[in-house]
Amino acid sequence: MDSQAPLCPLAFACFIFLCSSFWAANGMYARVGAAAADGDSRRMRLHTDGSRGDAHAWPGYLYTRAVGRCTPQFWSSGAEPWPNIVPQEAAVAKVFGSRSMERYGPRLTLLEATMRTDDIGGSAFVKLVKQGSAALLNAYTRRGFPFDSWEVKALLLEALVSEEAAVVQAERFEQANESCV
Image (cartoon, rainbow, N blue to C red):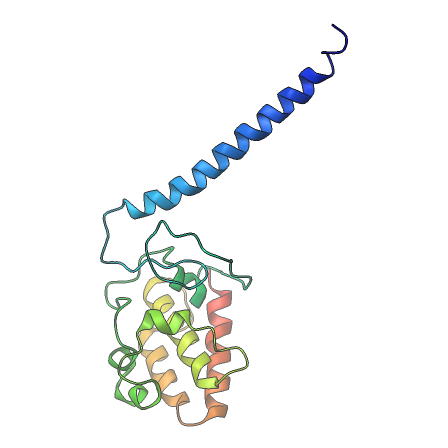
């Protein structure tokens, strides 16, 4: 009888560990399944790795960059609904004006602009459209955001004149997006 006494706590601990692992995994996949069942099939599903597709797909890696409530990564994650005035499928050229079409083309959408990952070490204009798109969304949805929507649009267009202006304005947008609450 004494030989079974040490096994009892060990067996109990293993049982608890296995059950908690099962429930954690079940909850994790149940949340993903619940996202697919919300009935909004028109909305594009995005994963943390930037891939698109069904909600049952599991991402291969996670972002390591900061994802605050107002950053481009937050808006591209689908964690919060976009304002109706600027849907995800809206073209950057239509939202910001025809001058932006010369730089970004007619097909780049706001969602694609916030999802871009080539802004680090890349063109200043890429960072400008990424941060500017997030700033526009924040201007529409966040009280107390330092820019109004018309200001974001005007400042982005003004910054298209040179790479130096784009760098400065992208930094201003980035600071506003990261400090927003």
